[in-house]
Length: 84
Image (cartoon, rainbow, N blue to C red; front, side, top):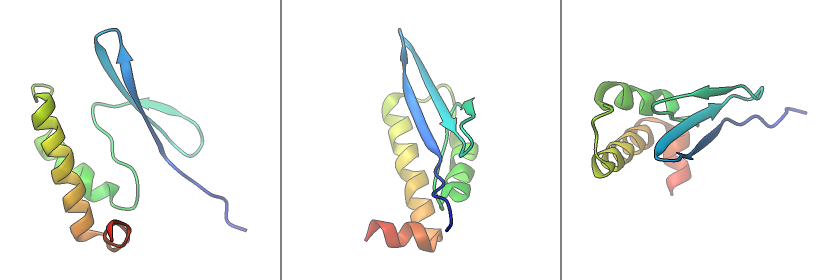
């Protein structure tokens, strides 16, 4: 039997400071500026690495997230199957 593995993304606010963490399958928490999980993560991370900036507005960040998801869905067969 194959164990169920998952990567968890945890985000929240510490007062006025946003925090984002990824938790690997072994339970390690890693503080991140941006994170992607799932089969399309390598593709989405490529978009985020290229275009992310701490200076993005909330709207610009949301648009970048959508762009990263669309890129992953277009290039990863598993991600594309999940959106249908």
